[in-house]
Image (cartoon, rainbow, N blue to C red):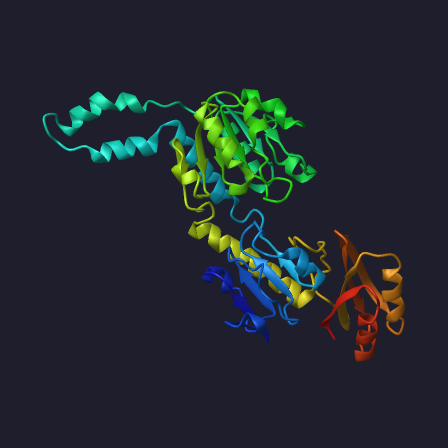
Length: 387
């Protein structure tokens, strides 16, 4: 029986995938797996029992995934599961900013019949909210992954000119982009052309504050900036000055903070990018599926701290998984330790200084063999998937 703890409210659609081999518990110290959304886990103590953490979402800045790797705890996320929800909100924010929808609505709902009827007041006052269409305008997209790629392709279908920039654009993501999208290798190249700029990158040491004074110096006057990635990506002090000078006409973001909520010409939503029933179901289903595949078969998909490996279901007598540091001669030491068994399948992958090796053996693994594997210098964890 595997024990699963949940942090935050997790969609019952996802939890409904758990079989009778799993039991939901409240005590995280007794859990084999944890499913989490946005709760901060950075100061949590993890028990030796914990095998994995599944983030029902993309961002993992609430999880100490590097420290988890050192303890042999796999951290998953669910890229793409909530991408459509965020994409739709991006265009909602873009259109709201372009057509002055929020201020127009606030004004209209404040009207009261008096000397003039409401209808007459509307006719007299509506011109103050005249906006602009997005069709034919130029959109810059920074980050062309799951969400950014959807935004870019949708913008093309809506008749926008799209310029994309991604410092780490993968072949897979590139192939998913419309041929109409112009890709630049230097972000500065596109800035003077943009009517809209939207950012879709993960928050980390490299990207925090990347939308800064240097960017605003090159940005087209009157651009609308959208941030549905993370608040820290935009330098708030530089943004404030850019808005005062009219470089940024409006700022649309899903990340309120003490500074942003006091700025004029902003549209701020309370981190609702993935807050749809559909997205929460999708994220939970993916998180649970990946967690179960790892616990039951040792396979890893969409981990942020260990390499991807898929050996399917074990069809031999035993399967063992070894997490270890990515150092020379490790594979030789592992295989030498299991020389009493015939190895029918072996897969090894590495990532960021850590490696993962799975072996299918044609005979039953012994406790002594497991003990000998654990004694190898550099081995972090040994799991018996099937014995």
